[in-house]
Structure formats: structure tokens, C-alpha cells
Length: 341
Image (cartoon, rainbow, N blue to C red; front, side, top):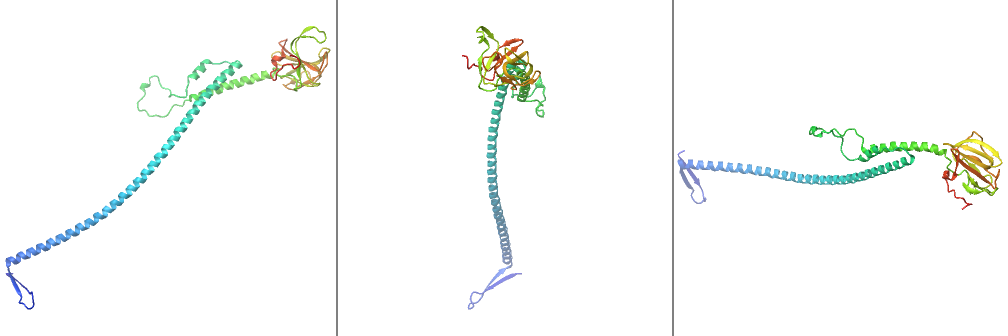
């Protein structure tokens, strides 16, 4: 193409105009138009591409913002839950500490009670005449419910970072102390049982049943109501209503039942350790020779037989063939005479 002619019309009434371009100009214009079109296409593509990326970025930003909001909400909830958990653990810790303090107080009180009981046991042992092992007692006092476990003499040779498998199977000191007291109290109980058997045979109560009785003549020197002479009265006279029941002051065996002009109807009981009791001036006897009686069994009835000035019982206690004051053996009531002061 050698030449390019352009024709254009501006007005129908006017002639058209023409513009002739040479080959070089045509090529230049063609290249320029092509470059413009390419640039426009590139710009359009770039605009569309960046606009798409912008939309994608906007969507991602919204998603990220949504996730951030969710994360904030979740974090807030988790923090609130952790705070609640921490508060609950703190409350539980406070309760545990209070419970531990209560247990410690109870343990201290129990330890003090054990010490008191041990002291009471020692007193009872002294009273009963039982042996007291001071060496064991001193060792017990040295023990405590606090402290660690037994260690070898050279404990520095123990392996470092050794696995802790728990304490050896040892008995706590408090339990050991309790077992010691339990064993000691068992011995005391057995001693009391043995002593009770002996006490059952010891005449330790008034030999009469009923409150309308009194001591009309005590053990000791007196004036004989029949001879008006001073003599030693080796028994106790207990007065009361006619046929007042007489009871055994302790367990024993009836060894004599009889009658004579001095004490009238009488009986004698052998108890233990060389102790016998005799009862005179009885209205009647309710037991037989060889009969076993127990404390408070009715053995006869108060009367006025023999040489007597009134209804009473002549109560005599003999220990190892020697008369003794019955007042020393009467533990169930006061023995002050209501007739003699």
C-alpha cells in the first residue's frame, strides 16, 4: 500500500474533504493504533485482574475478621471458664486447708487424750499394785506422730533421684501408742476382774436390808447392860424392826448355824483370805450349813433371842482369827450411829 486517502463529510451542502497519507505515515498510524489497542487491552485486563483480587481480598478480610471475632469470643469464654475453674480450685483448696486444720486439731486432741488416758492407766496401775514399766513409758513419750521414716546410718550413700516407691510398711506412732494403751488397759481390766472376784468375797456392805436401821452399839469399849461392867465389845450391834431381813455382805459359804444362851440363833459365813462374819440374836435363820451364798442373799431375820435388850443383830467380823471393826468393811453407806453420838 503506497498511499492512504481519507474522505470525510462535514456538511451535505459543502464538498467533502480528503486527506492523503503517505506509506510511512500510514504504517506509523497503524502501529500507534495497534499499540493503543494493546495498551487498552492490557489496562483492561489489569483492571479486571486487580478488581478480582480486591474482591477476593475483601472476602478474605471479612472471613479473617469473622474468625478473629470468633477467636476473641472463644478466648473470652475460655478465659471465663478458666477463671471459674481457678476460683473453684481456690475454694476447694480453702476447704481442703480448713479440713486439714480440723484434722490436725483432732489429731492433736487425740494425742492429748491418749496421753491423758495413759496417765490415768498409770494411776490405776499404781492403785491396783500392778507393775509399771517406766522404760517403755519413757520410750512412748519420746515417740511422736510427726517425723520421717527410718534411714540407714550413712544416708548420704543413698542413690540420687531414686524413684520414690512410698514409705515402708511401718505402724504410725499414734496407732502404736494406742495399741500400747489398749494392751495396758486390758491388763488393768483383767486385774479389776480378778480384784472384783476378791471384792465379791469381801464383806463391804451393811448386813441388813432396809433404811429403818441404826447402829445401837459400836465396836469398842462399853458398859455391859447386864453386868454394868466395862468390857470390850468386839462386834457391831445393828438395831431395827422385828424380822428385818439380814443379807450376806459378800459371797461365801455358811460354815455354822446354831443357838446358844448368849447370842440365841446365830450363823457364821466364811468368805476369803481368812475373813468370816457372824450374826447373832436372829429371829430365824434362812440358810443351812454348807450352803453357798452370794452378796445380798437373805440369810436370816433380825430378832431378840439370847441375852438381848431389844431387836438387833450382833454383827462380827473376824480376820485371821482376830476380831476387827466391821465399820472398816462397810462401804455402801455412812455408819454413824443414830443412837450414840
